[in-house]
Length: 141
Image 1 (cartoon, rainbow, N blue to C red):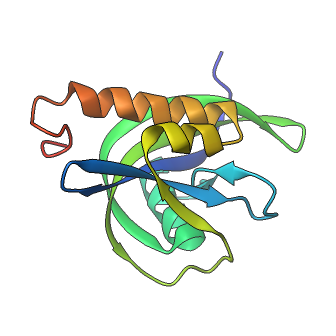
Image 2 (image 1 turned 45 degrees about the horizontal axis):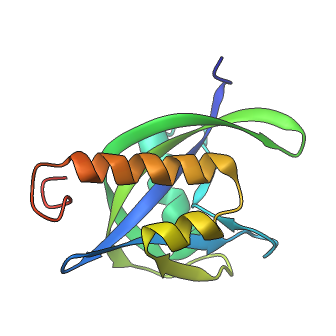
Image 3 (image 1 turned 90 degrees about the vertical axis):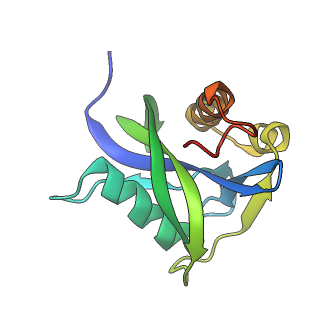
């Protein structure tokens, strides 16, 4: 059973030629590697929340190219759910948080990520990209 949707997050890709890299961030306490995600504010859609969190946490501007699944997780002892979106990097801005940002290939990103829901979202994004009929997988998205 899915928990109430409280968070939105992003699996962010950067494509250069035939190489696809994924964004991985340090958590706010610096102890974990995570995907950008956060609370959905009142009046926000999950899509807007995901893009806002990406900009705040990583200083990255992006566009949503596909919805991904909703993942259950526990934060500070409370059950919650996060709706992930596949996002393409389109630019940069000033981050409002002090986070370490890394761009990694699929295997390295999955290995770095600390939490199961983030690993699952990234794996789902990779499958979605690989199903794209265009060469390189992401041109059509």
